[in-house]
Amino acid sequence: MMPLVFAPEGEVNVIKKVNGNPQIKSHLETLGFVSGAEVTVINEIAGNLIVNIKETRVAVSKEMAQKIMI
Image (cartoon, rainbow, N blue to C red; front, top):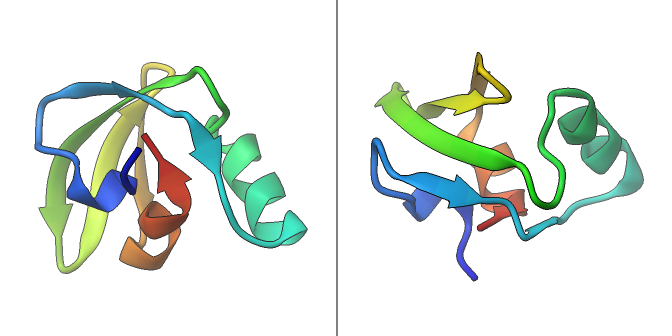
């Protein structure tokens, strides 16, 4: 298991766990970051990751990406 921030661009990964306090976990779950969901890093812009999750592109900060384990 490793944080999403280390995932190579273009590779499809499966989310294993979401860490963080309940507020952060709830926010990420609302965006679709739940265990079992597939996530692909599209690219990185100014330290933020652009990811494809549930057929939607979402930008997450590096701090948030550290809490998403794949």
